[in-house]
Length: 626
View 1 (cartoon, rainbow, N blue to C red):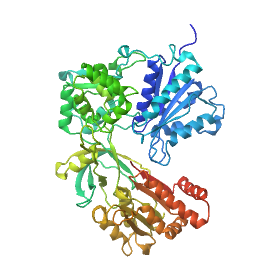
View 2: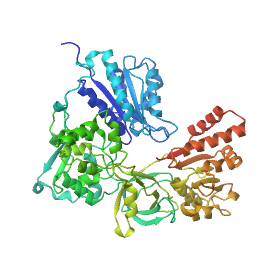
View 3: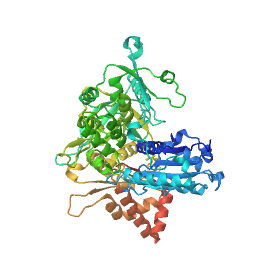
View 4: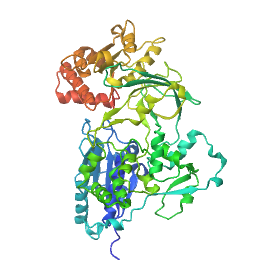
């Protein structure tokens, strides 16, 4: 026997599942060319064993303002150790593929710094790093497809053993050995324990704990439940937006949170759509199932793996874990559908969609139209996919995150949210349709009288709660004002008993008459002696972009108040920026750079360094959402 066949290691760090998707695709494509691959999350891999790997492909996403996924943080800390030295990885070949969004300032920041660090540690690149861009008409796959082809041909040049038959020879489709990664066991009802009338938190934990969409370190059990007590429309008639103020109270147990924290809600899906999906897939909603990984390594039986999983009703599993109504399926979904299509035309169309040539047409049909899984299945009526494949490939139902707009001091026992109800019109295929955001439109449809218990998880956001002695410069246009409502309400309570540092707040929206969120709240705090009053060293400044011929945004108001902004910065103020525009944080940063240049007489580079130092010291915090 010659040299043993090489394995490719694919390490991924994913926040929402896109990087996992890309990693699995790289693994699949390698195996179809005869090269076995293992796909592992960076938080489940021991970084100290990296020097023993021959070839590693890293797939990493960058979130928000250049942040790395949670699953990457410890791995990255390990790589940054000083004692590793510049020959630690001298035997390792690597390739990096990044997923990012060029609308953000720190585009693909994580992939770029990882690539550089691996080179510093002595590793050799196989191919130039690939940078996938969300802004591209075909998404990150526009870069991934050609990047993978050059990865295979270079690996083959390095050592033909990777691909015994050459890098272009694919296992024929009909011999495709892909097996679903999960098995489903069905249970006879009479053998089930009466404890199936479990607490709803346990049912959610059970369903989500079995779900393939679970990213390894996700907490599956909700922290607690919230019940809505108020649903109020903040925008006025004539506004282009529908922004709501929601108030909730804790049901049974409550969670301690701080201003600036984030809450994730698990939305409910439309029950008629769930019924339609179950009917379309010929499933029995009343059957009880357990879902478990198909053990490939040791062929251990599903039963051993599953002892800790209690069976759950199929319909409940679908409702709590599978997003059948709002997320678009991925490209692999279409490929697997093509194996199960019995109508020739449908089979051909699906195979075309799954190919590199059909990628742009698939994008126009699927992501651009935001087709749901249910709609796609209805469009291809000859396809009957086994439930195992659906469980694996239907996008997972994800909790949606919102900045909390209340203060535990000012609103004890409550959680407030400021939510823009998302809806948009699809481009044109075959006709324009209105689409709605799953979570925001569901929340907007709820009334306090329904007394629905909403499962939630609390997290630290990227806006740390400021000590009351810290002067603040807050910038929050639109719903970006949400966390700052909490900040200011909190300081107003603290001010009753002790001195408070000044707060400047810049708010912006389109029209004063229709979009001025929380107008009375801000104005009452801007009056004599209030939190935002000039007497107290602060101030409240508004930018209504569409109320005059020339558009005015928050960055223009910041420049108008340059002297005061600079004085506060010199007094040690922290800057907090929040909002839903990819461009706004960059524009605010540029305005502040201009002020620093002017006041210090320094260059643009110096001003940029000055603000970077502020960021490093924890005095420049940004929370932006797309």
